[in-house]
Length: 171
Image 1 (cartoon, helix red, strand yellow):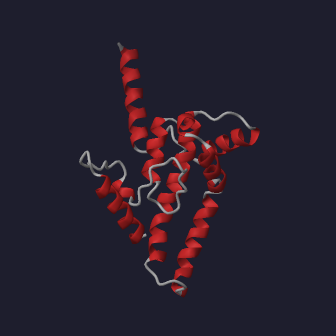
Image 2 (spheres, rainbow, N blue to C red):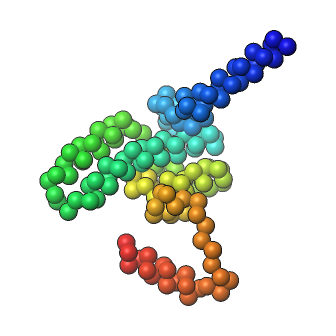
Image 3 (cartoon, helix red, strand yellow):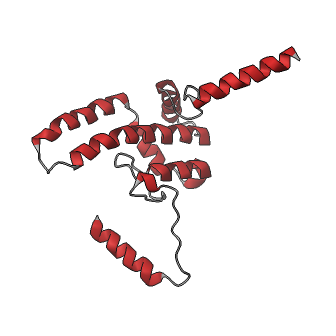
């Protein structure tokens, strides 16, 4: 009985740590990202867990870069007051040195090797300007709208075509 209580206590601690973000199966620290980068460098096959790490790494960078990019976007083109924000982005890039390498790997991957759960994770991040999504990703322009499905009538080709034309104009 005492062993069972100890196991339950240990399980509870693990759950607390996971909830606090201290344990993660995603790429939560530089060591995990570097292990995946080493696998890539050696030409080893990547697992779906590796792709989770790659996507998480790229997504965390994009989430941190977006508020800075929003500040830049709110300024007129060429405004010198954007310089501090550009410097913040440069500093952030230094903390995420694997962004380019991981972006290239993800871009060359296909949805089957990445896995269904990771495809959903990619779709979650596509609305961030600093997340380079592969061609097969569902392009969401607003990160808060990820996972929203649009409902349309069965014969809605004209409605969809009009919406696509309208979206082109807005961008």
